[in-house]
Amino acid sequence: MSLRELYQEIIIDHGKQPRNFGTLENANHVQAGHNPLCGDKLMLYVCEENGLVKDVCFEGNGCAISVASASLMTEVIKGKSTQEIETFFTAFHDLLTTGQEPSMDLGKLMALSGVAAFPIRVKCATLAWHTLKAALANDNKTVSTE
Image (cartoon, rainbow, N blue to C red; front, side, top):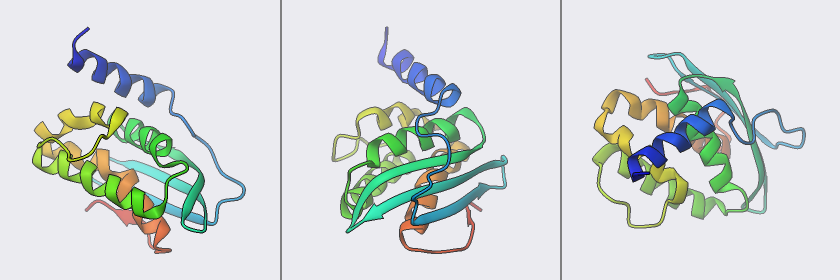
């Protein structure tokens, strides 16, 4: 199996069976996100205590890339500090917008690296991340990628 095939398999798996899908009763940050260009919508629920993300879930619908990205993001950020999350956000965003190898290990997030070749899909892959950033900043407006 090639690396490209593995990445496609990860995206399909997370797109069809997203991890951490649902609501979170003890969330102290709730944020809506929307990509009006393709219709991706999500609601993100975050339980953050003392600068650490204790738990995170999401609900919504969208393309496989959008759902897979949200699912992978939730796996990556659990137990991380808000500073670590900002570092992941920057590295992931740079990967998708420049196509250059990240300066840190992004783990399974690398499955979305091929999105860089399709600029219109970058918004699909980054919607959950922009929504997370707004949630942690307590921005109550719906995040839009437009």
